[in-house]
Length: 210
Image 1 (cartoon, one colour):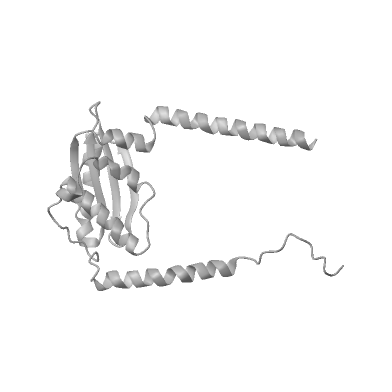
Image 2 (image 1 turned 180 degrees about the horizontal axis):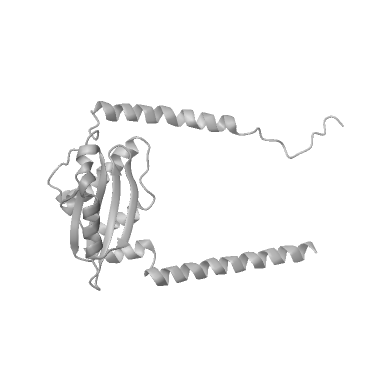
């Protein structure tokens, strides 16, 4: 009887895997491939716009976008939300009509208008943001490396300007203070988690009293 139950469970698990695989195939067929595949194809298109929000230099928070044309005549946008101390916090990759892109420009005009930026300078800005955050022990958004590939053959070495951003310089007191706080908080948080864990109980019975 036990073997029959195990076989039924194994068959059920196989059916579940087949359903998940089918949904994945359907998603890929609908969207045109995985995220990495779509970004790779987009990287071959002509650059339509490259921009950064002016609030990044003023407030230390803003968005960098790169828009490329597709072979079908559409547009694909890669967007990165940057915090000067905590790096790339969010990532977006999506098709966008030119009217929608213009509306996005209008939506952010009051809080941080988009201004043109050379693609090489923008890519350098992103990598610097990630490096500063990693100095604090903070990783970028999980999709950053995948979507960042939309820059394709744009070379950071071709950047000719250095964009000052509040708190990015390692000599900045605010940056050093956050670095010290991050280093102190990590061991403390680990100790708190360890204290919350219940003591491990042995699975073997104590036979010494018998």
